[in-house]
Image (tube, rainbow over all chains, first blue to last red; front, side):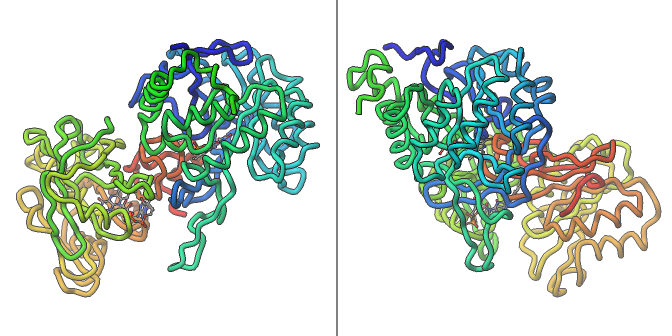
Length: 298
Length: 264
Ligand SMILES: Cc1cc2nc3c(=O)[nH]c(=O)nc-3n(C[C@H](O)[C@H](O)[C@H](O)COP(=O)(O)OP(=O)(O)OC[C@H]3O[C@@H](n4cnc5c(N)ncnc54)[C@H](O)[C@@H]3O)c2cc1C
Ligand SMILES: Cc1cc2nc3c(=O)[nH]c(=O)nc-3n(C[C@H](O)[C@H](O)[C@H](O)COP(=O)(O)O)c2cc1C
C-alpha cells in the first residue's frame, strides 16, 4: 500500500506528523524511532527566548486538556544550535513552527531560518498581536494576509500557515492566508477553553483561560478541514483530537493531505507508532491502495 | 524508560486514604533510582493525563516497584479500586532523582519528608545507607497528626518524627524538629534532601543557607504529559550567571539544587 506523498514539493514517507508543542524530539525519542514519521513538527520558536506563562499551565477536562504553556521556547538561535542537530539524525522531514508577538518578530524569526536545513516552516498565527492591543493575529483576515505575505517574502522554504479555530468563518481566514501567499494550511490550533475549580472558586489555570485540545475537539476540527479544503486550493495538514489511525483516515477524507498527532502523543508517548499501524490496517481492511486516493472524497 | 501495562502485585491501605501499590515491572525496577517518579494512567478515558507518583521503593531482584499514594481526586480514587492481578499503564522511571554522590564528603545526612513527600525518602534512605553504611542518616518526618509510616526507616536511618498537633513525636514542623536537633549537635558537613509541601521547602531554604547545609529539593507541579514533551510543569531556578532558567519538573527534575529554586 502506498503511504508516501509529495507535500509542497517535499517527499514524505507517510502522511503523519506531530502537532507543534505536543512533541519534544529528545523526550519522544526515548519511546520510538522518530524516523517512522513523514515529518516532525516542533514547538513554536520565536526570534528571542520566551518564558511562557505562570503555573498551573495544564488542566484536565472531559475528553481532553487545557494548556496555557504560552509558547515557552529558547529562541531561534539556541534552537538551531542545540535542537536541530539532534533531529537531523533521523530520516524524517523537519517542520519548524514559528511564533511572534508583532509583525517584526514574525519576519525576524522567518529570516533566522533562511539557509537553515529544515524542510518547511509553519506560521502559528494564533499569537496575540501585542502592537494591536493583544488581538490574535489569526482572527482578522486583513492581519492574516498582511503577516503571511510579510513572512512569505523572507522565507526560502514552503510556508504552512496554521489557523486558529476561534473565528466565525474559518474559510474567510483560509482565503486570506492563501491570498498572502501561503503554500499550505494546517488546522486546527487549540480552541479557547476554561475550567473552574468550584471548591476553590478559582480558575484552574493561572491565566484563567487556555487552549483546549484532545479527542473532544475532533468533530470541530474535521468540520473545519472539510470546509477549508472546499474553499481553497492548498494542501492541508489536518489535526485536532486524533487518537487513532481511523481518525487519521477521517481527516484525510475530509480533505487533509497530512495529519498531525497532538495530545494523543502527550497521553501516550508511543501513540504515533500505534496510529501508523492502525492506519495501515484500515487501508488493508477497506482496500485502500494509495492513502491519497481517499483524500477529500467527502 | 518505557511505557506499557504492568500487573499489580499487591495493593494495601496503609492508613485511611493512603495506599501502597506494588507493580511487577522488572526493567523499571532495574533502572529506578531514588527521587524518580512514574506516571500512572487511568483506565477511564475521561481522565487522559497521567498521575505522577514518586518511587517509594524498587526491588530489582523481585522486579517490583512500590508506590505510596493518597486518594485526593478522581484518578487516585480509581487507582484505589484496583486489585492484585489488575494491570495499570505506567511510564517511567522519569526524572533525574536525588544525587547520591553529593553525600560522599558529608559527615551527616538529613532527609526531610512532609506528608506525601515522605515515601520517596524511604528509597533514598535505603540507597544512601547501602552506599555509605558508616554515615549517620537522620530522617525528619512531618505529619499533620497520627503517623502512618516510620518504623520501616529504622534499618537505614534514625527517625525523628514531628506532628502539627503533637500526636506523634515533637509538636511542630519537621524544620522545628531539625532546629532542635541542631541546637544540640556539633558542627559538621551536612547535606539535606527534602520532599514535601512547598511551604516546608521554602522555610528550609534560608535556614539551610544560614547553616551552610547543601540542599536538594524534590518539587511538585501540575503536569501535562509527565515525560518532558509539553512544558506544562516548569520550575524556576537561578542560574550561575544570575539569570532565571526554566526547567521541566518531570524530566529535568523533580530534584533540583535547593539554593537555586525560586519559589513564586
Ligand atoms: C513529582 C511528583 C511526585 C508526586 N508523588 C506523589 C506520591 O508519591 N504520592 C502521592 O500520593 N502523590 C504524589 N504526587 C501528587 C499526585 O500526582 C496527585 O495527588 C495526583 O495526580 C492527583 O490525581 P487525582 O486524579 O486523584 O486528582 P484530581 O485533582 O482529580 O486531578 C486532576 C488533575 O490534576 C493533576 N493533579 C492534581 N493534584 C496534583 C498534584 N498535587 N501534583 C501534580 N498534579 C496534580 C492530576 O494529575 C490530574 O491531571 C506527586 C506529584 C508530583 C508532581
Ligand atoms: C501543550 C500544547 C502546546 C502546544 N503548543 C503549540 C505551539 O507551540 N504552536 C502551535 O502552533 N500549536 C501548539 N499547540 C496546538 C497543537 O499543535 C494542535 O494544533 C492542537 O493541540 C490540536 O490537536 P490535538 O487535539 O491533537 O492536540 C499546542 C497544544 C498543546 C496541547
